[in-house]
Length: 394
Image (cartoon, rainbow, N blue to C red; front, top):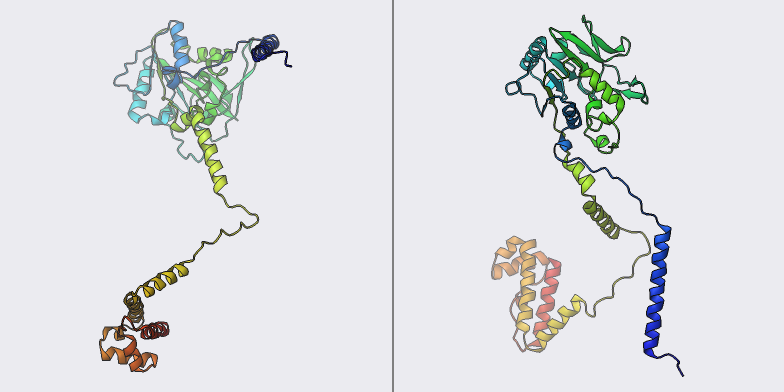
């Protein structure tokens, strides 16, 4: 006799399940510790396409008036006598007229900062008019890093991917480099103003890199650029001549992420499952090597059996004229393909031509081409047999 009824068993099961769940929750709360982790979110708005956005905000926080734009437009951009202009773009994109106007503005007291063109494989264009006008020429040597040591900071290396340059009949006020390895930085006096030429502006950008390719995409966002103390000190020195005296103009090339980069970094929840599904489908469809599969079971009747059964049905129900017409038309069709001249004839001329071609008596051919009586079975069989023989011999 069972001591517990159905209701008591249900209560015991519920209590046991509650005890197991409670024990699991207690173990989880005891074994795991809640921690906080900061995740760097991708930049939004202007910070996403302006590589000099961090420099702009740092200058504004220091009380400097800043204007930034994507391209140089001297007609709309009025430069003051004590302004500073930093051009992040490739200087080769400037026209000779713009180069001449910029140097005239510098001679009146302005401060211009430009960079050398980036190093590109098989790049034969090394002429930069605005640099040649002030006696600076590009070097063909491979890029090398320059050490930078700021007091109280870790050692740094700069300009590792920048193109170096050398002077011709000019004496810079400041320079960084030597005659053997060429230079990565120089400040030249031009009239009342100054021109600063650098091998690269990577230390002024948001991420510490002017590369917008895949390497720039995977770069750590927690370091580089103006986040590093040595970079801030170097930026303050290169901006020194007119710092705080006028407006700081920042000209940059907008670095919008490409469609491929956006798909790779943000669309992976979609394309990864699709890629796996495609690979699985290709794996299912590909040819495999192994034992041969058994042949599929044959049908109960072959096509020839169906044709024979259909002919027997017509023969049994006195439809012999249809069978004879089909065989006669088949013979005439073969004759038109094999001997068009004989097929074009009619009557006795056609019979004689067929008899001469097949070496058969004309009477036999004449009889075979005449429809038999509907009740004369032997004549029907004889004519059908003769027509099949004639068809096979043509």
